[in-house]
Image (tube, rainbow, N blue to C red):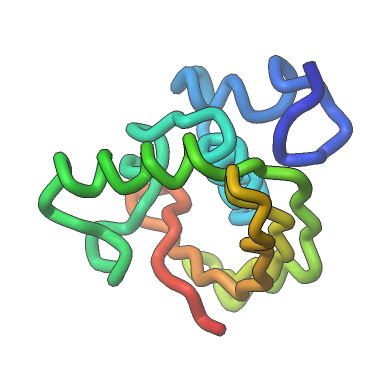
Length: 132
């Protein structure tokens, strides 16, 4: 099976090792792709584990957050991911701009473009927040 992140690699060779905790993303783009795949495959714990606890997306009510992620993942078709820009700021901060093509199960277009901020903490890249 091709990886949901649209890297043109198989899932086993691309995002699965990250989801299975056999390796960690070495770049913000790898983390972005692995998070997109995690949403597409309902890998809820991975989404939570790769979100910066200091960022606005982190929800300390893990039960409610897990439920929200599960609902979004199960009611959304993840059709395409295009990386538009990968911009390192310094050794511990970077942005990745992407366009995600999504559809709700009712057929509504949920596509969006986002510039995401990533921070490296304790040697690991984490999603921090949306910039635009």
